[in-house]
Length: 295
Image 1 (spheres, one colour):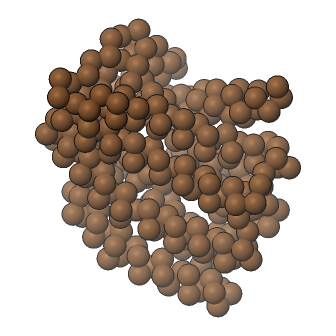
Image 2 (tube, rainbow, N blue to C red):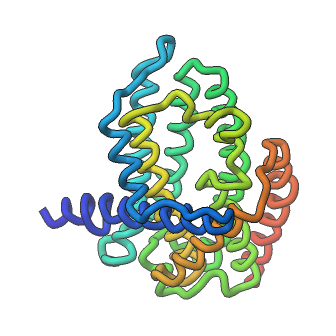
């Protein structure tokens, strides 16, 4: 019963969802103030989800129903499970298991893959274009994400247990660790689908792209996945590169996300590919070499 409470309530699914909603509200409020708007009330993210869950699900006539409907659920479950494992490693370190870092890394890519499948299954041309863009984004930033993890793995002597990273000290304090941390910050923005890496959604270009055909509870599950990811990804970065997670470290990373979102234009998908493959990839390989040499 206690285990079920930890996974569903604290520090699991419900806790991550609530914190994610608060973080989303802060993000929207700051963005509004930057644009000289008042911004939403604090409970607006909750209102958004509640509104979606009382609306009707509308499935496109030619969509593959099973894939279209399953994608948001898979996204929500995988994001929630990743956040739960991360939360357990923070609040209950003894509950961790060897290799939980690898499990979390795999779980965090599933929401993006689910979004691709769901958009492709909708039989909408704009959604398919968004799915194509999202696929290219995943192929570009995931490699950099894993390179940053490899640097951390080398610097910690082969650690794969999240709860032990805080004991081992901040990986970002070394030269190679600092480079990997910088790479991870850029990758974090892409994983969260925030500007400048939001080409797959791009409301002004393709009307929401991957989300264009979703409505009602199915869109609600995608929304909740986004809230949870806004907690899980920065928390993971904090644990690995900043010597453990804390409220202060999370707030700093959230501020960096908001600053990047409000000070950058949207990149074209070709620009994203060039950035990750032709600039960040060589930098990441240099970081691996430096880590191997002990720097």
